Length: 150
Image (cartoon, rainbow, N blue to C red; front, side):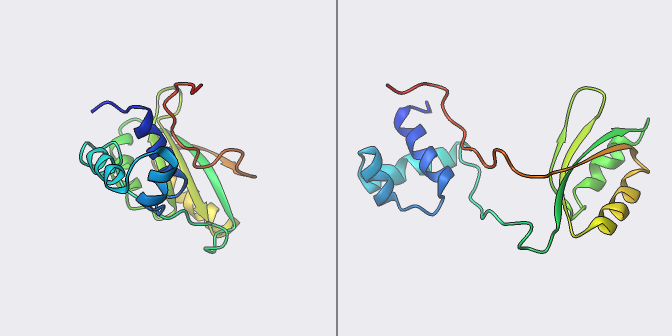
């Protein structure tokens, strides 16, 4: 399935508000609600739309801060870490990357003591570099087609 301009418009609306009605999206993009629903269903079936979720404020949910932690795994510790990281409740995103480090994680933590305990849990797997997030400059930006509309 080709992601045409209409599909990109629909995806833009869903990325801004996944609960937006097909009727409203249809009015905005010039399609009937059933046509929007059909396109959305096709994109779901093809895995273009992977799912829907709520955006939660980590601060209001009881976490004082967010951090980015980069891990450079010790020899023989990457595979055990990859198995372990899936069970770490603090981790909201984890990426295996190229370069000097093997892993970049985005974590949310209750306080400084929680961070210290979390790092103590990680250092058996490798060297850690921690960066505290001060603010979001861009957050949850929608993926766009890259095609400029006229």
